[in-house]
Image (cartoon, rainbow, N blue to C red):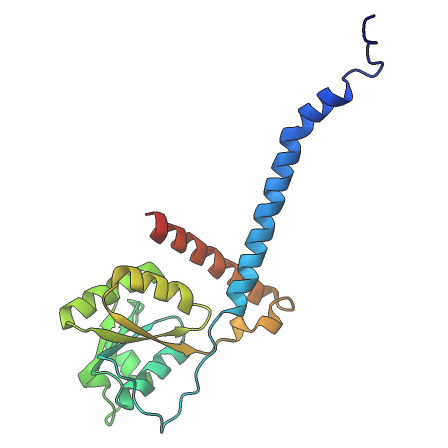
Length: 214
């Protein structure tokens, strides 16, 4: 006896087979979303905390200092390190081409500072990757084996990743500058902060994939 013809079209087995790719796609998308959210939250939690900068603290044992531009506090912190005896020179990487040495000296230098003798300006970098390339050139020219890296806390993970890729044999000592943008308790209460951190996390993941897989 022949099997009855389904009244409503396809049988249950055929329907399940039809929608199986759709279910698999939904599961895949949901899994990738959860992984991305989990990675982002871990990224936020692991953003390094800024160290207390004390005038009486001993200088760091490095050959030089590099500060990645992006905020006045970064350069100010780097100059404080230089004046305290950390390193022999300072590179300010990624200086705006409209800014002159005299402009920076007026803000961060002076007659009793080491700005005139011991600060180099880098005008080539426009991105963090450019910072890494500019720093590599400078470190190679000066033959330094260790440097202090000064940048904001949310920016530090990607900066160190790129610098270590470009200079695997150079010792990097991070000096974290405080940034309100990385306060985890502000993440969900401030749209601007959240957007900045999401953007930085996306850039970090892309950079990580590029460095790992070329």
